[in-house]
Image 1 (cartoon, rainbow, N blue to C red):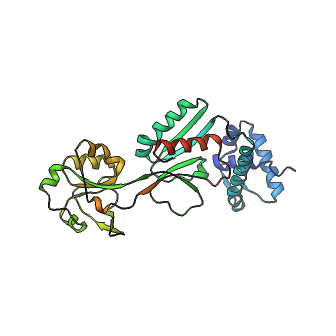
Image 2: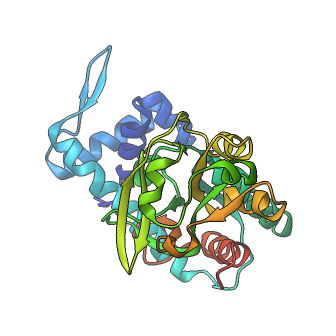
Image 3: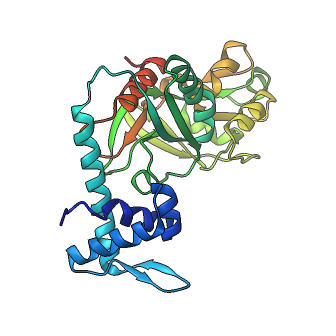
Length: 291
């Protein structure tokens, strides 16, 4: 029996949670899906699914086999991609996830421009500040900001971000001196998710616990608060550039700026990226300022 028979159907059932959903996804009948999954179980010699009239679930063996089955699908996709002409015009669907603010302001304008150049491209973008499972949810790649955790995913550096400290001129004119990092103890600091600010002091990373009257998980809200003179703010440069350019904010403590961090595209470990994904990554790298 063909060793590939039933793998697509099994994965679809596992992901959709039902034979009906899998049949709709694969554009086939429920009976066909059921037959092929049973054939796969017969070939393997293990039951992969617990079937009752009210509930469908994976067996222990099914859970073990699922990740391997998904890997087999990727391998087959890679083999197919390897046979395609590398200079083929990008086409097809690309599924992406990115952080909300950065995705809205920087990634989507470039994606939209890419789509206007290549009319046969379709994009499914999910803006989400949570780190989603790329393989489980079928994403082609994700945009990640900052230092990457150890992972089996592959990564491409697209650009850098620099963290700055800024304050409004009216705040700074009446505030205590601000020459050394310890001077922050005497200042109001506008806080995001963390009360720890990072710096580089004499070539070594320094982390300071700061305090203030306002905490908010929105970078734009903190920029506005800083412009209103409520205190100092530490944020990535792309939040602050416009306010610095128009004089609403002034950068301080420049000599203590931490090392820049990466802006990355991460993707599952596939040997051959589809032409559409490869071209979009190159387009983003150029658009974000890294050739």
